[in-house]
Amino acid sequence: MANDNQLTILRSGVDAWNAWRYENDGEHIDLDGANLSGMNLAGAHLEDANLSKANLSKANLNYVYLENANLESANLDGANLKDAHLAGANLRGTNLSGANLFDADLQDADLRGANLKYANLEDANYKGAKR
Image 1: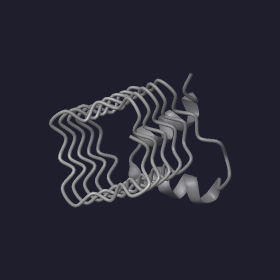
Image 2: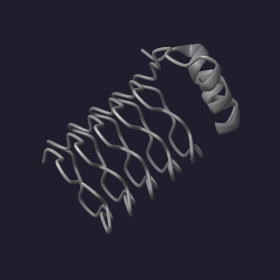
Image 3: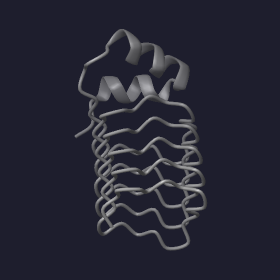
Image 4: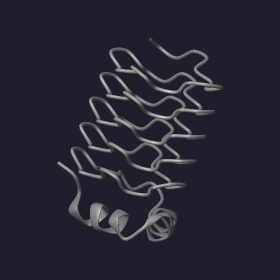
């Protein structure tokens, strides 16, 4: 279950989130099952975060930092992940249907069982990704 305090800060905006993240470096980020649908999270630092089963459908995730994040079984249907940093992320069983992954870094990500139907993977780097 998502950490309510962290969820409140994230919903305050990316600038507030990134400032909090900088001040609380090393704190475990738990946004498991959070409803972040349609949010503008462009440029957010969510490295190593637990976002399993989170709803990020239609969210703006341009330039988001999700390295080594756990997004297992998350819903990213129609999300904009242009230039997103997803290296080493766990995307097993994630719904990426219709997502824009243009120029995204998916290097060494785990994409097994992910739904990539109609996803834009143009210029994406998925070297070493498990598919």
